[in-house]
Length: 177
Image 1: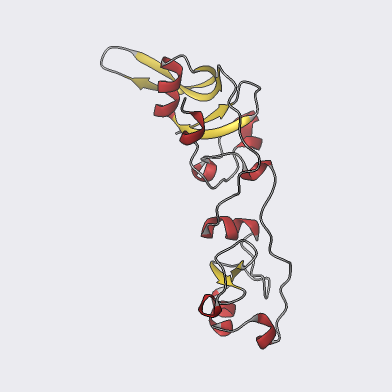
Image 2 (image 1 turned 90 degrees about the vertical axis):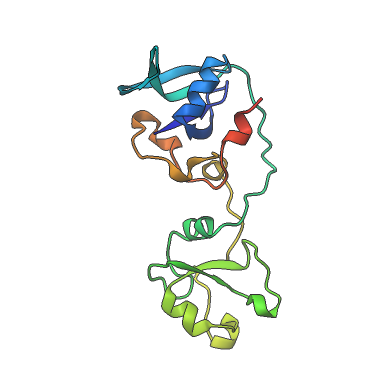
């Protein structure tokens, strides 16, 4: 079970484990906004509500200039799991300019690709194959990429479903303090 962490201004900040959320609440760093009454947490001497949404008591500044790290999951998500060459469902990633020829491991050089296109393209550029990319790959932007720790989010947030989006970096780092 995961817990949505809201900043003191009620903007989504991270999704953490319920254990981390309970520690934040017990240390008076957060307050429970919504809890899951169907799944209490039992200790040796007490029963606690399992937090579904918590809000931090102090505002945590989040730098918006931070770059989103390149990951396989992130590239597939950015490209909506569609092959950049043929448009079929993709399950691999491909370097537009091959790594063997000095291609970088960057958002601008990686695209999602189906297994067939990836194997046929092999160690060549799309220009050598006579292929065109369906879009120009770029670094993802927006709030959906800034909510941390959401890559394992469960789709059961009810009214908070808008904030339970996939992300790329674990959220604990942001809420420690």
